[in-house]
Image 1 (cartoon, rainbow, N blue to C red):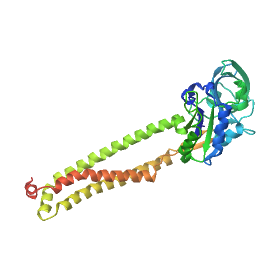
Image 2 (image 1 turned 135 degrees about the horizontal axis):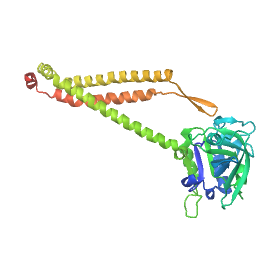
Image 3 (image 1 turned 30 degrees about the vertical axis):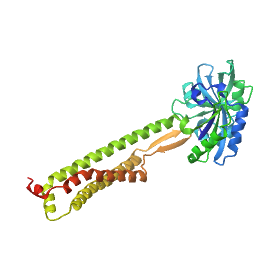
Image 4 (image 1 turned 90 degrees about the horizontal axis):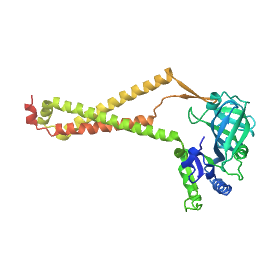
Length: 361
């Protein structure tokens, strides 16, 4: 829905909730942006959009809607998954035909609007005047932003007519790249290409935003990653305390045995290695047992409780999984922590006086 990268006029994203028409990109700026995009091999496609808010009416009820005025052929190439969000209706001719609308499922369900119904859009243009226009519902889309999504689509020409635009302005240009690995490089190149464009305050006139900066789900993912890191740190602490406690008990329970092997000539380094290897073996066995139980649980969840989610006309199976790299990483961390936790008890055992140890009761 948002592409890999988007280009806006400065300040547009900061005011995105208001969809400010006064911060649209002017034709000269659009031409500059498209010229820069044409010379980049990592760019697959881009699509200009006019974004605005309007009132949506079925002649009985009225509610608000967020609209994207698009050039259908270019939007279909830049956002290839958009067609897969179609729940009802048709995209036989174009993504969205002139005089027609693609509306979100939330509005269709809440206002009992079906494909083929006539509705009215009322919008306020940049001058504050109000204009209305009737449309036919061409299709109903599943939301890409959760159950509260209110984004609809119409033809760019209809959007400009509804907003009475004197010039062919656009709100944003959404760019699709060859892959996520190219985002940082393309963003930097675009920022460099637009550096000479300045506003009246001497600041850069254009802003380039990656999908991470624009997506609310990206912030949620960062929070989940932080929570995951916190849980890992807690588990490492538990392993450290548990192994150290077990090894300290092992040393305390074997004081006389330690004194005996020390008295017959076992060097301190050998005693140290014995207890460190004991702790490492404890960590290794725990890692293997824990990994086996985890993989068995994941397999059981996939086989017994599969979760299928419908997204438009497509269906996705949500399957829990764990990467082999994660298993190896966590296993390695556990082994290192187990060895570190064994060092203090092992050092205590290695430095123990044989005579004192043999007298221990």
